[in-house]
Every structure is written in C-alpha cells, then in structure tokens.
Image (cartoon, rainbow, N blue to C red; front, side, top):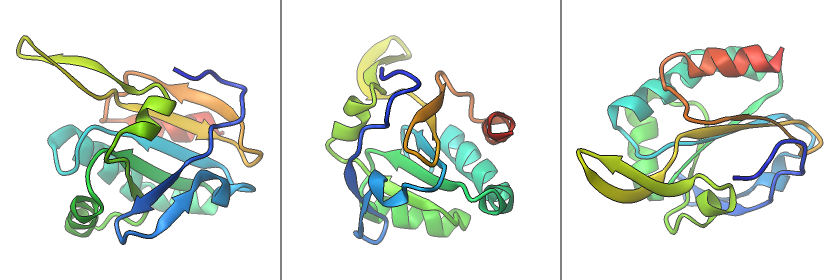
Length: 151
C-alpha cells in the first residue's frame, strides 16, 4: 500500500468510452480516486450511487471523482448508464494500477481464496499529493466519510 503525503503515482487508463485518462490530467484539482471490485454488484452499486447522489457537493468543491475497477470499458458503460453515474469510470483490466496503489490482494469468500480489489479510496489534493487513504471501505456512508475529510 502506498502512503499518505507522497505524490500520487501517475497512470493512464481507458474510461467507459475507451478514452484515455491520466491522473496527471487532473493536476490543479482535488481527486477522489476510488477502487472498487466489480460493476453492478450490491456493494459497488451502493458506493457509486452515494457518490452520484452527492455529486453536486463534489462539483461545487471542484473535486473530480474517478472510479477504478478491473472491469472492461464496455462493462463500465453499462454500469454508468444503468445508474446514471455522472463521473468517470476507469478500466484497469490487467489490475496494474490496482497493484501500483497496493489495493490488489488476496481475498476470501465462503472459504475460497482469490485475488481481487480491496475497496480503497484515495483523496489527492490539487498538487497531486495523497492527503487521505480510506482502507477497508464500507460502501454505505463512504461518500459522507470522504466529504467530511474534504472539510
């Protein structure tokens, strides 16, 4: 896991429209970079919809929201359209950015071990510095937790 108070590692990923985005493209604006396991699953939908519902508050504060998961751009497009998500979703299909940020690891469900995304969010200030890391995120209430950290 990367640590607070360093410059956030730059990367480039495709969005839901297969357009490339670099983290450095957002220099000068605060960014919420949130990593989630899978499009259109209960927890990930809860988390995304809370960010959607609070989107005006983020926009007024000049904050960019970027969601990252290993899903494809096509999957992101369906997820975004189904739930009217107003922010960018980035496809990390080979999980290289997840690994770069230390959020790809061994998980366990029903006694089976597998590798996947550990739900984590990073608050990056307008200078590109990591100012807050939210680990072991619970989807319900997470957007409010992030908003509280912004203030």
